[in-house]
Each structure stands twice: as C-alpha cells, then as structure tokens.
Image 1: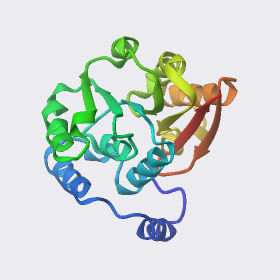
Image 2 (image 1 turned 90 degrees about the vertical axis):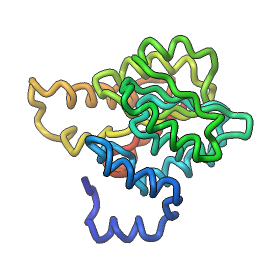
Image 3 (image 1 turned 120 degrees about the vertical axis):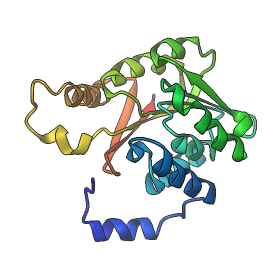
Image 4 (image 1 turned 45 degrees about the horizontal axis):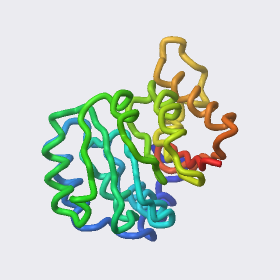
Length: 213
C-alpha cells in the first residue's frame, strides 16, 4: 500500500540505497517458491531496517517473525562483530530455506533460528536486547511487547511492522475484525506506556520505532 503518490514513492526508492545482490536472489526465490511472497519486507523497507540497525550497532537483536529471512539479513547488517541475532518463526517448512540464505551471508554464524511459539521461546532467551523487530501474528503484538520490554537494554529500540494495517486503523472498526482491533490496541499501548517513547513512520504498511527509556 502506498501512503504517498506512487511516482513520488518510486523516486524515494530510486534515490535510496540499492538492494544487495544476495537479497535480490532471496526475493526472486521467495516469489518463485514460497506462498504469500509479499509478506517479505521488500527492498525499500529492508534498507530502512538496515540503516536503523547500523545506527544502533546492536550486540543482540531479536526478531519475532522470520518468514524467508529477508528482514533478518537486513537487520544483521548492523550487528557488532561479536553480536547475535535470534529469530523466531513457527513455520517449520521455511526453516531450511532461511538457513540456506543465512549461510550464504557473512552473518550466518551469528544468526540463531528458533522454531516454535514465540510466546514460549522468548522467556527462555537468556540475554538482553538492543534491537527487537516484531513482525508476526498481529493479535499477539501486545503479548510480545509485554514479554520483551524487560529484556530490552535502556535505550533499546523496538521496531513494529504493519502498524497502519492497510489503512484500516482509521476506518470504522468492524466488531468481527480481530486483527485490526489488535493493531489498534497495540498502537495505543505504545503511545501510552511510560516505559517507551514512540514515533510512527508511514513507511509501506507502517513501521513504529519505540525507544525504551
């Protein structure tokens, strides 16, 4: 979904950093082999994630929702040399696909894959994080936030994807639309929780940056 005119959006993309070759290959294979390929972050948002990670230079990153690993590799670009990235996904059919591309990158040994329910896995991670990216099932965004907030280092950044939910956040809520309701509740939480300060970026489907105080 474009929140600015498409021609202007094209200009923004054309004058931003180019997509690395490995990620171009990952995009091609995702569209050829994987169902719902548009769930991938895409080249422009990927460069945004990469830039934010490089600015933070995190030692430990947590990603909730791996899909084919595109955003994982973008976030890994900012890792410290001795840093780690833990990424969680529930779809076992994508595990080997992800690993193939992780190992083709220079960050393969730093990326730890976790297969299963993130609500069960996160409490078992014995580390604190400088950067977290939430991009999984929207109805658990609030639960993910409550699990990770105490695992964030002071000044740590939480990135949350799809917070504009194709513009549905400003439409009259259908009582049966549980996903939009969950996104609205999450956005309200980020605005009101005194442990974080938050700004919403109208990038693609909406990206929130929240900083732990």
